[in-house]
Image (cartoon, rainbow, N blue to C red; front, side, top):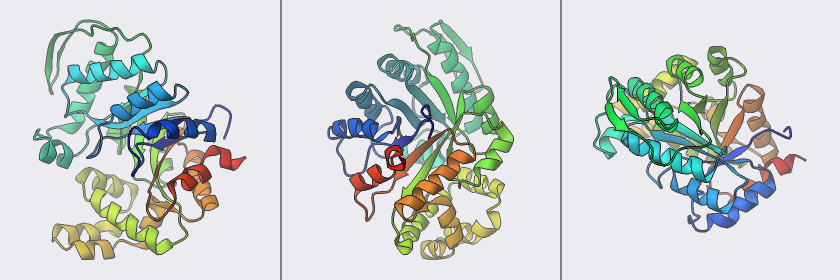
Length: 322
């Protein structure tokens, strides 16, 4: 890693309470991690862990990957972003994404309509609102009348978009400040770079299970793959990446309701491409491959299954490379 390179990890850690993260944040900096990235699915919200990190460890960069464009009103979303930008000036990256029909519609009761348009319109609104001007905004997704942030944002946050295929990737890098990648192999990064260019700011969540028990890693990986890659957006992403034929048996079994078969028909090769596993040295090399192929900010999602979390976080850190 170069002196100015960024190296992130996903928080909060499983099995660690939010208050107990205080000591972890300082430890992460001492180990060479530069970033902590939260998420928002079915655990804690995406903003609270970052607010704690901002208060407890001002040396860390903060990011969220991602907040859905649907589940907060645009004005409230602008307020939440402005608050993080105030407590961590110049250190906060906001990640916006479409999310999924499951999270938006099934869990939050909000119609998951025209997700690309919603993300595009939300990004445009946020640019205006965070600039401090009074906003009247009419778009296909929503209309805002007369909104103005009462607390001006002095240092504008970085706005990234979760992006999988060319349309959203281009929106992320042309109108946003960068793209957030998820569920791809290190080799897949090149296909993304072919769309957005080698200099595009890219961060990627990289799932890491540092164990030499390949059977355990593949067992965990298969369960995660069936949970994620049966979501239509991810299925289309992997068709675009060229895995359609290999994953079609899983999609067919899942559609038929045969969950056991869906797990069984995922090839080992697919799991090994999408889940970093092996010795610590091997995992570090695999993470380095993402960076070599164009990821500017690797964001490790350490899977705390059959491992010692403290040992893993330490052994995967930048300091372990010196």
